[in-house]
Image (cartoon, rainbow, N blue to C red; front, side):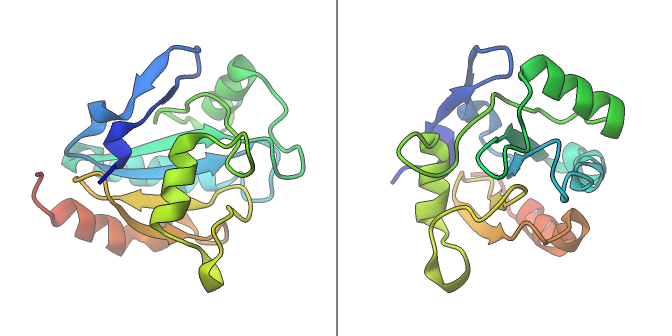
Length: 164
């Protein structure tokens, strides 16, 4: 059975980024955008990352321009925005599509592993969040409206699980 660790995505600089490097960690994978009403969630994502990274949490941001063209910039512009506006230090990777025929395979996997409200598979909007256990399997999916702080209990539970 495939896990998140079986995927290689593209880093912001265009190089391959193997998710196997995060084996044994809890991941919070989020499709992000710089010009969205949910963009202030970068602050909460950064707070979760700083609070729990020593215990094994990694937040991975995937910029996406599929919803309202709210992420039009290139990798350098996105990185500059994230750093200057929200002091983001967690990995922000290459821009992806999360739905449709050109969707990043990782997001196809995440959507199959954990459907949304009423069984929908498509990502509804920017800042949809997927929590992945230390074993690389998806634990949960959270709507764009779910603030990062509301995931605290689920993150702690996932971090309490032993590494495989």
